Length: 390
Image 1 (cartoon, rainbow, N blue to C red):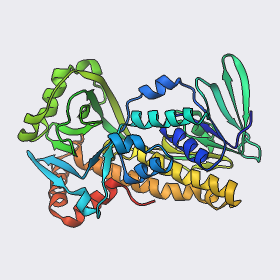
Image 2 (image 1 turned 60 degrees about the vertical axis):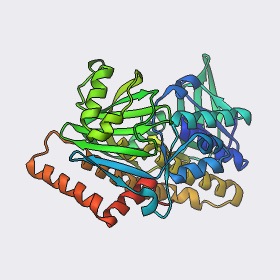
Image 3 (image 1 turned 90 degrees about the horizontal axis):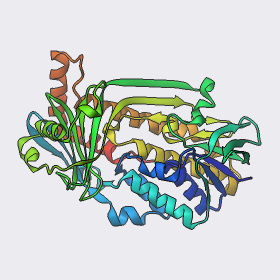
Image 4 (image 1 turned 135 degrees about the horizontal axis):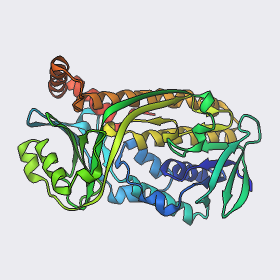
């Protein structure tokens, strides 16, 4: 089998790349080691920057987010027992973020790909990118016990942090990593969000909390917890009690509780692999970088990678120009590191660290106070939160 672009990974970044290339008339095939049902079952982020929403519209799959997404004009910071709104919309000249779950984004892209009759090979085993240093790359894989080879012009590695794409160039990358000394216990529940048009970040003596949403009837809540905690240690009742204890009294009283439909503990890390191009193999999304979820940048960074990569491929095939391909890694990493900085900063600002002493705690409190009372500081937060321009 032959194609122009072989895409490894059928998550949102691989599917979005495939859709953008299809719209430009560029043939592509996606290989995914899991089943489609497994991919759809992954619970992930749900806050989309304006850049990402615009990209979904450009790809022809914006109807879902336009019809069912919830626009957020502000965020709220809770500390010292009080709540402080940050007018993101006003501070950025009208920019917003939109709550629309990654599961829904993935579903929309899957349906569009199916309707267009494009090839996605699920449950492809032992996928290996090969010969990408030369002019004729290929991807080998196994399906139903049979060995196959996909010949292509380029390979896009959109297969996540644990995927084969970065592993295949392990000796050629420089990795930068910071691991945080706590995790997030997250609960998904079919209850109305406590704040339907704002995301609430809490910093309390008991640790960090986050109130977000997937829709007006489904909420996603988090509390900071020790890394060695187990999900089994946390009953629903314990979770709701802990969440309330980390919010201001008025907001805590508005929390609507219900049985969890998903509960998990996620570690937090910052990670970047450089470069993001290796001959005719390109890394995108979590294959190249991970951010702590505090800044809601993971899916959005993947989308911006895909925008740059799709543009590079279009320039190559349509305009016969290598410029986008040659600059891909440099352009992506410039944006990646700014998002890494923002996610690290917001994580450091809103969490309680085990080794934080009295001085560091007082500095954190002073920075929070300055942030909500300085228009310049609030604007810097807002600009990063809605997403820096491409």
